[in-house]
Length: 107
Picture 1 (cartoon, rainbow, N blue to C red):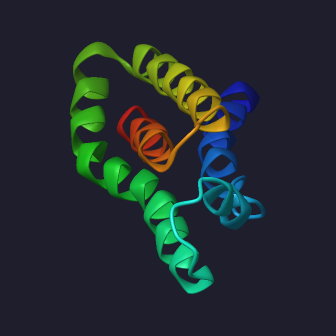
Picture 2 (cartoon, rainbow, N blue to C red):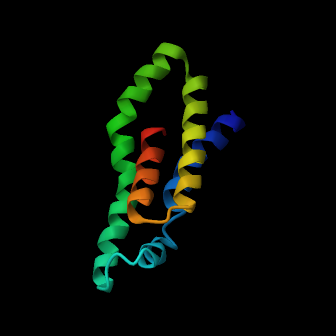
């Protein structure tokens, strides 16, 4: 049960770990000179994860019923690891959006 709890805690960590630095990351992308627009882009990057997760939640549930929960959990963990890695090295906003959406799709 402890292992399952450790697997489960990965999703909130992956979702919330970007909050302290997302503003500065978007600022470093040099998308806009208007500081008020950076918050809009930061909101887009933050919400990409939850929107993608919402879109695929039922699919993962059905797949878990069909093939078992272990393969689905391992796929989710691998997807989270991959998306966090891609997001960490994202050189631009589209790559950051893709990485966050990928994390939500595979979680």
